Image (cartoon, rainbow, N blue to C red; front, side, top):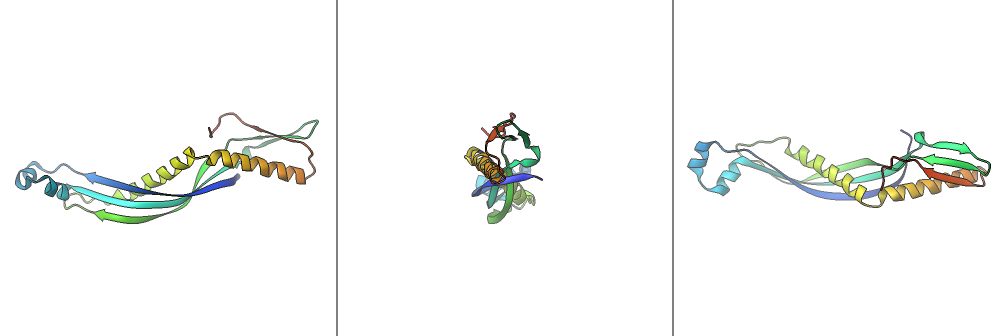
Length: 159
């Protein structure tokens, strides 16, 4: 609720997903050709998920302490917050025997998770923390505080 979002990245992932069922033994005997059997039993979908991943600091967990030389601010580590995303269906092939209606949704969810994972592996969290610290220092300096010390709480979300 009180997250100060200070960094974001726009990213895109292409995800291919498939769903297959075991063909009944009788169908396997009749068809015999692996490619034809696959066409009967395997559904595939490809989606491109594009979205914004944001990172920020939850100010509702911030602690401010007046010291003899100024203000000590203890901030929680930055966290990732998925922003809006959009999904584009790139291809779809539905088999005759396996009509998996949930497959595009599964691929979309997998794409969103890959976006979040790629944001965590980037410097997004560190950037969000650095920018939050600069912003807090600037606000307090504009309020007349001469010396601001920022400390980060343990239990880091960022590495």
